Length: 401
Length: 150
Image 1 (cartoon, each protein chain N blue to C red):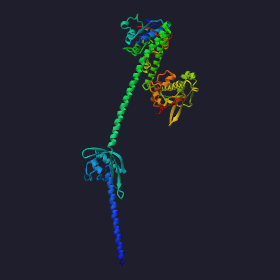
Image 2: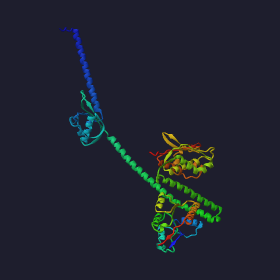
Image 3: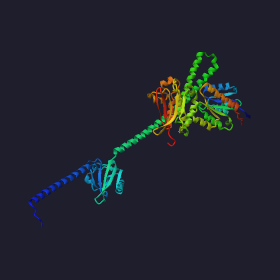
Image 4: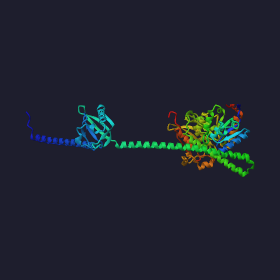
């Protein structure tokens, strides 16, 4: 038989059950609050979120879904989710893939609004399970990619425009080159005449020419020679890239030695010590053109070695820079101001200091070098300091590339 | 009639260049006849003995043709082509003498069987020397073809 509770005990129980009720209510409120919080989150999401049953029926949607489809919630729920895409078949395939693989990522689809407006989206979805572990449905989110797609289209359009523009520039360049070529050739013919008849005049009428007359003839033939140099350089410049020769592999050292052989008189006259690094690599390219580039660089090095240089020296070699083979021609000559680094590669650009040092020159030599190197897919640059010398660096593409 | 021709035909539209060339040939001691023509059509009339050059006795076939490429009307390459396609004329040595060192011109000349390709050098001495060398090689060292006319 049960003992009758005392009054105090009863009072205690009542208090506890009251406390219990409060706790219960609080828990209920917390749960409600949590639901509300979750719901708000879902509703606040900018992406359309949809819950779909295993059969494909919409069981829940958020506000964004109403906006993108144009249908209110109660009209959406219970319908088949694929109806709202421009390509329902493709949408169903995505859904089957979710059921099969558990999820789908960035699946491109298009949602159709009830008034016809189409929104391109990336469809992302995952399955969710019930307590028993069976598939209870699919959570799906669609990300509006209109802006991204527009940007991509714009990018493609710009790319196309740029390509067309580049092609136009290339065509114009080619036209200009062939123009320079034709003009240069046409200019050569009168020089043959000028210099030819200055010679004929000297030979046939030299005895009746005064000293002044002879001086004038010299001015004429010097000018003709200068023009010839200029024309030859222009011709060479316009031919790079326009006339392409077969590319071969050959030792860089050979190129350097051949160039130096032809330059021996000037090297000797100035007492220049030339040092060629051993084990220079084999290079790949149009041999004659690269020979010209190396020749021009060496010629420059000699020209600008400086009249009062006590120990003139030129170094030719190769070094590693950022894992790339970089060839160099280094001199301890008069050097170049940093602000002139770009200018010296421009056609017809001659620095005043260069004019003072060596006089003659066409202002095309380094332009030719740059074009040859770039034609071979390489780069050319320099470091230099007035009074200390210059180092010209260049790279070349490997055969594989 | 078989004969060894010794005259030179110079086809050159630039009067001054023709004068320099003739001068150099004479300086080399060559006193043979030099005919100068200034365009391609005339050159073809000359070698084919057509039109005003119909008189074969007055205009015998040359032993050497020096041919410029850039000519008004029919250019030097076309003249060369027609000469080299002819069974008799093709035996005459034809030297292309031009300011052009275009790969294309060189290539086309040899495709049409030019016997030599030379560029006109700038510089009086160089020009003179080259012409004198041409003269001494082709007119003295080289054994000319025997041309038999039909």
